[in-house]
Image (tube, rainbow, N blue to C red; front, side, top):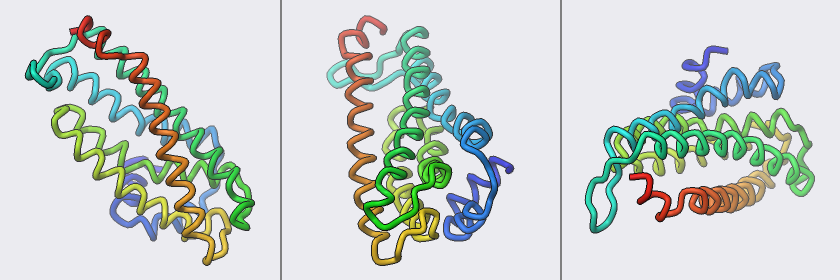
Length: 198
């Protein structure tokens, strides 16, 4: 699988790309090694460069450069949590399957989690200029549409009338997951630590 071709397909032609993904033989390890680990590095590397070289805008202080050490450690921790998020989201999707008369399948659940986060990972390049991070949020919203099309494609063999419920509950779980991770990251890199790292 060519990673650039797959990312382009999932962003530009998601409906057609899900059909290819559905039939594609792979393993959990291969999907992580050949796709998730690489793509998840985009926001982390861009964040490191953006924080260190461009700086961040802090209310009442303006644009502030951030130390190399702080920028690097935040990028590494964010990267690790991105990988954890993909894995946990896949577990949630798989665990919810019986609730919606779907067929539990860890690999297909991972495909849904990993590929639906593609727009977020690719848009992570905007972390180079922290003020543009709003574009990452917009890409994440598009990723939800990609996720919906993934459910609709039959990856989890969900009856058509239960796709919307499965999708909505997955979104709720994903939001809770991101909030928990944001709180953890916030605790690790509190404002006090941030100011000391500047």
